[in-house]
Image 1 (tube, rainbow, N blue to C red):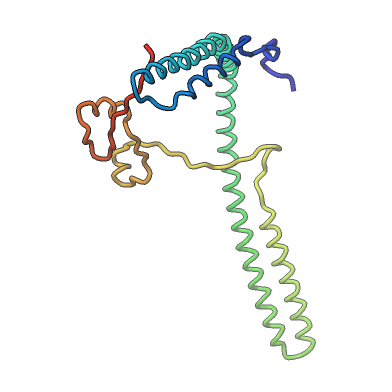
Image 2: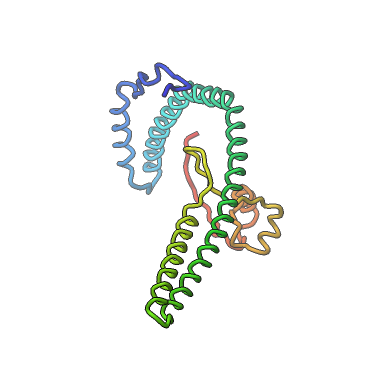
Length: 235
């Protein structure tokens, strides 16, 4: 199948770190991992120097990632925009055709179900008639009468079997390659009423920005464990 969109040159892009980056990273990690604790002012200076080293390299890598990734993101946005523009009308038509064809096929399914019920009712009636004929054959007074009754019972049983086969084979017509399935849909019209009636059908999530705005003024909010952490950073 021919691809609707094409992209050239991207597979040949080389992404690698600058020469010496791996060695510098190893040196920095060796320096920072040597800092196992801070007990006095000298240890604090050593830890601060190590923090500067590791923070600096993290910032360098992040800046490089953003810089070289921007063209790729721009290409991705252009690809998505082009594909969306091209397929908007197609997607609308796909949804419309799926809907009208689904409605038609659902109607055909309902007709087939009704026909199957009628055919099955007829098969059940014939089965009861066959059973009645068999009971009559069992009560026949003479061999001749019994033989005739047995023939009538066998014919009735054959008709019942044929009717069952016909009922089982009733199916709606459907274009090749088309599958139809029904799915329940819903729309929430009043979330408060839904929560009051069925809280298990709602998801409660914390308002993290709101919590962060409140805890400097109140550290005894029910349902929260609040604490303060000190973290050094490089300015």
